[in-house]
Length: 374
Image (tube, rainbow, N blue to C red):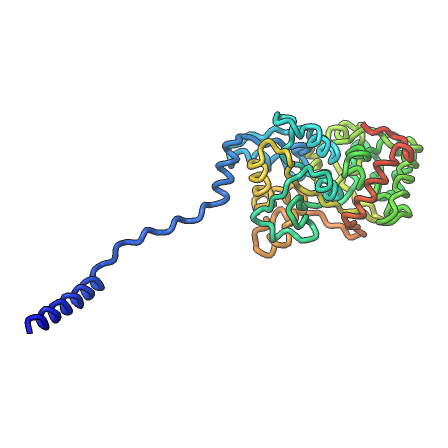
């Protein structure tokens, strides 16, 4: 009997213990640590590097000047700017020449013509990186592995100093007229500059050539040179303003930026050739030998953010994320409204077509045209 009472008492105590345990407040659980913010980590790493080295980014090109200043102010980094008037080939050569150099002459990032994309990968001079907005970049404007990605595009146009030119040329054939003797130039060396090569490519399309036949463009420039109208210098805003090269061929965003900057002194007119013109995409990439790889990645994140894309838009460039930002309402409507419109034919060559054309132009410019552009 005593034993049964003992078993009963133990059972009651066990049940009571479970009840009390269930009713007791639970100890506070330690929350799982939040995932580290990748942007915060990237910013910290970039600040530790302290600086970024760019190359061939004129401040009046796509509003790069304002974009660079905004980047410096936002992240507290210094920006070392190399060879602002260089061409795409100069940028690539700078990476190769400084691959073992961690000093100030080694670029971290490049902005080159669309056609140079495959070369960057084939020569192993760039490293892959996908920005946070990667999915909103059109698939046909980026390398699927992230080695390069389109940033913006523009349309080729004539930039004319109206104070120095009485009759503003309206089409390609006008460039052969005697009245333009010693007045026309390109914004780069066709042997190295994507902008200059696209100018020759455009001339080919509307002077008997095609997207697959650029030779007529070289033939056309030979005629311009033989007529004494071509000036073999790398033209820019200052040479236009001084009347040294009062007619130049360049991307419309640079021509329109010059018009704003010069503010009527002299008067600038931007003309799209009536017969037609060409559009060109530029691409971004990070050097495989970048001395400041984290700062380079942060620069890419900045450029491909809504903020960065709107800086390009302000500079009359069509940012690569234009459609996505327009759909999401993040595109600056005032800047977009200022983009020029052109009703004539505009060609958009493929990357293979650009590659083929630039090779023909670079290899044959001197023999076909004979103008040593410097």
